Amino acid sequence: MWVLMQRLLAIVWLFLTALAGACGGAAHPVGIFTATGTMTVARDGHAATLLSNGPVLITGGYDNNSLLASAELYDPAAGTFTATGSMGAARDGHAATLLSNGLVLITGGYSDSSPVASAELYDPAAGTFTATGSMGTARYAHTATLLSNGLVLIAGGFADGSSLASAELYDPGAGTFTATGSMGEARDGHTATLLPSGLVLIAGGFTGFGYLASAELYDQTAGGFTPTGSMGASRDSHTATLLPNGLVLIAGGFADDTTFANAELYDQAAGAFTATGSMAEARRSHTATLLPSGIVLVAGGYAGGTILASAELYDPGAGRFAASGSMTETRWSPTAALLASGTVLIAGGWGSGGAVASAELYSQP
Image (cartoon, rainbow, N blue to C red):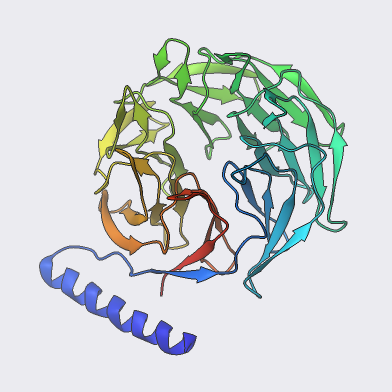
């Protein structure tokens, strides 16, 4: 049946490609969403990390009743989730980073009614979590970026009623965090993108003074942040995706009671953001995944009191978005992980009835 479905999709793709050629435009490859195994527990505010050996590690989150310390693995071959060792602390709003040595670094998050500074490592071979050094500052809603030198940059976040400007570096060899230069502006709900140059682009977010359009660059050699051009719109809860051409796609987000459909591109050479085509639907807290084709899949999110199931594709060559069907379930703040097969695993999030346990796969012919 799956082989037949793939052939039918290929026929549809060829038809659309021919139609687009006749119309003088480019067609997005057609994709579909299909349900896959269900997680062992419903989760929102969790993290998903593709491991070096192929499975996807799902950690923490909220299950409609309490914060979770549990974790599970998705097996792409079997299409199932199975429990693995639990974290030392229940947490959501944490960050999960695959290290160069294959371990996964879990940092911060919200636990026991307050942000935490603790961190732990997941070992895929042992299937267990062990404590590592703690951050200098408790934080959640922060970013964690693996740098080209193997260190992890932790930036911003929220704690004790305010956004944070501080940043620190985790050294996997020493198992410790050390302070590095602070950002020019305190922010949470921002994005962090490792650029081909080795710099990290920090964009947008929220601070105690409102939503931010500003952006800055972290230089791992100098150990500090410097401002760069600002976005055309202030926003948080947006996505940032590094494209094959080296530009960064910023899409959607929220500011001042408005959810955005617009998008823009950051060019490091120019140090500036420029507008690109807008999404068909405004959305925030959605996912954005770079597909092997170079096209970006945007899925789910929230806008105007509605949780979304819709998805769209951004074509960097054409500079525009096109609809790409809908997920099997509405999802706000799900996770998305690109599998080795080129399919995308979308799991959990907040649905019409609360946190959801279901997951699905997006695939292109």
